[in-house]
Length: 516
Image (cartoon, rainbow, N blue to C red):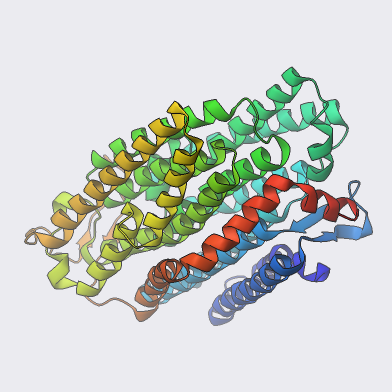
């Protein structure tokens, strides 16, 4: 099994290199390579999940160098669960992107750029999940930044270049903070290995340890779009092409959340920052959802709800209990899938009507009932309507907060309930204006011309929707619904993952080669 751990990282990189060598030629082969690569990666990730759930963490040491000197990749329950979900989501998004390119009869060159960049980004995500040391995690984030910048600016329009500049500046700021934290960590402990750091942080001076924790949290909070470091996200993500926006919103911010979970559970369990994280979680939930309520563009509504629901995950981490951490992991899995699906639905709406501004939409329920259904199911799931997975994830976090019993935890429970209700209001407002009301006369053309004052890109409308686009979106909606049916086994798995993280012993023993 050790040889399989590196496959989710190396296979997409290899495929990206092959496709760059092919160039703009052999368009069908380009698409086939992408889909086959992601399918194999998903299968390998599932095999690894079954293996580590049954027998514990699996470690592979790259280049034959033993830990902690060499680079090691560690597959445990948390990392492999994230791998399975992320590869399934990226596979659906890739099918959507390929279908859209064929439907639009695009030239070969754009997809020849999109495909390798997408796979580099996928490799970066996998590397982040599997990294066994802080420096390799930094390298993974840089891979993400390079691939995602290409995707964000794909097409080279004014709005995308502007959004890409903002995204890159924030990414570089986060990377700078991360590098500073790496330097301080190595100077204080002599290692960057997660397993060794888990042992060496204990006797470290409290002030030094707090400095390292806060610097790392600040770097990861930028990537996760946690308030007040989230202002860049609603202005950056909605401008990208629909497939890129979907995977950014659903997946990339969760890589930052994953890093925070790994950091707090493995290196700083029950530290003094927990109270600060609770306040940050509450502010993120409320500020994000209030922003969503005020928006009139569907993609911006989803962007603000994305920020808001990051607060739920931080809430679970801040509780520093197995129950809270399990709820946070469950909610990450749910949110990756549901949010990605909603942004793909927004892409379908934009293709159908030429815009995602709700004041210019209407009658979509009658005109496109399938798209209406594909919107309604994940929207209700995101809002936490029983018995969907969104409700079960929120319920787990609320129960963990009530079990904690502190005034701040109870305040967060109240904030969680308020956020859920306001999320329902935000998505219901979109439903009422875009789907339920009578159509606006302006939404009848074939092309929406670009607006130079806003930088909005022109969008060609269509009355027929390609099967690949609808099918890939429906697959994500079904995957999100499957979490409801599999809530029992999934909750049990997240409980085991959280217990493994909090105990730290299995991870450290597997990496350092010690018997438990």
